[in-house]
Length: 321
Image (cartoon, rainbow, N blue to C red; front, side, top):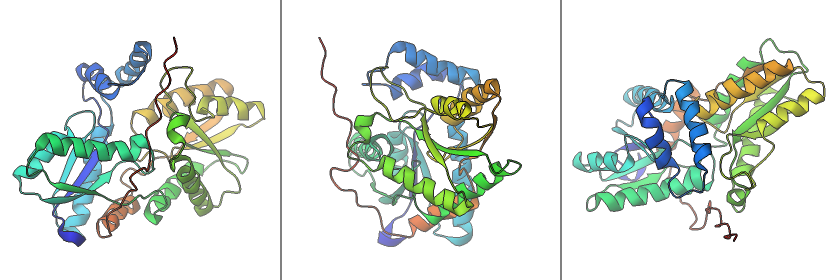
């Protein structure tokens, strides 16, 4: 790799591995956030529905395994480390291990394709916080470039969308989805613009004449504005228009973790079944070979230099008395 880097760090969100992890995990995720306790318990039930285990950790292990095979075959032959924001392996623990192993400089792959506070800047803040916690000798970490429009990301998504479209008629509606965020967080950042660009590139690669976009997985206080339309509202809307087939492509996510398997495969699928809509959900990029090779390609390029004010956090809401 350029710049004398000697390791790759995969930095992700984290998730519980067993039922007893669920509440501590969610408390970690929601620390400092104004999320009602009832909403936290509602999300906890999503995890309990699947045995209290999030699929995200195993999916990261699979991605690292496939990337390891590619790097062993084609280089660069560097160790791969994995750290999380919200659950084990925590980033600071991983960085302590990197320091003990003699790692001085590492490239970092964030498991988020789009520029937003929670998907980019907050991860950089996580790195700085972990470096401060580890102290002297903590490795330098440089982020890999953004990849929302990288050909490997587009081709992997397009491949899975083509697969989902098989057997559907020409009248099928196609909707791309991503995690909703507070509208205040989206202002001043590239999140919405990048999502729309990715959707257009994937739709063009598949040859779609038209496509839609919706958001999912919102949380937070009910009165706080978030990006819309919500996927459930979108489904009801196209049903009222006479649609009877739907393909959902969750391009906002890189793996089939909880927000995908619960909010789409469970809730959205149940709603479509109630309305008589035939629904197919396209896979996320996961370990598609084009996506894995994309990460290697990014490792061989220059690091991303983020502007000081990019992806700003949402402004605090005024106190109401």
